[in-house]
Image: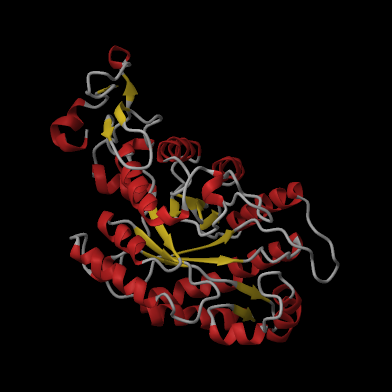
Length: 395
């Protein structure tokens, strides 16, 4: 079971002081939060992608590469990478490069995005959002698994004899989660490819996403990737933690109730009706355990901790409390309740082992004699002839 945090990089006035962080401060503070998450032993730090104020993470690969250089063990991910408005060729290149830079400590979550103005900014139409997500991911999936790709679709120019570089680290693509707010087509897509499905699960009614998670599990089994309980599921969440429950509620109330999105809402109402967890470490533990009861065994739990204009020192304290007082208990209690044989979240190491067994991974090397790529054959030297003999379909 993986536990971690995600950030959307939002900026808003602090309701208790009126102070608004600059973009430079917010970017720097997200790096500090990621470093602290690594230091306290969390498993994942995920970064959203946004192209409109008041959000700053327009280039996740840039920031995550910087964080990779400053951290030691934490997995880096996205929440989400826009599969609709980004060119899948550029996604293939950028995230393969980031996978190399991070030495395999990378996966990513792809999603449609639901901010209407963003689509025309990148020459797209939100009415094609689902179709774009399906087609673009189909291409991304192939670009990471085939040295030479011929492809034609409805939303971008065709490719002939195209090779995306660099090839994925160890010729093993990053694991992909498909993030969704409410779209069954995205759950179907995740199931078709045997990828992970991540339910947003933030501030929606309790168990709102259970029908979609159940649908994904059923379709995962339908496509022959394993039984439904072997499907790879992740959940989002939001928490604010203090040693005492009353202190948590008192401190967090103005940040929630004065935040532009929720202004006029009741914190107490949201705490009761949604997965929002505000309270002592034990109360956050108890609330999170209800997720396992409701959704069944799952593989990744991410919490939003640093948004809604929280000062960075308060956000760092939240990460500390989550990593030292909440997650260790959740690991133990969730493990004790897990069904025998329940899968773990894939990592680069586990995917390499699954593909190669005890054989050395393939290390693609460009072949200068095939550099023009016009022959339709692989532009890479066969760096492991014995691997070709043992695994002819994988090269």
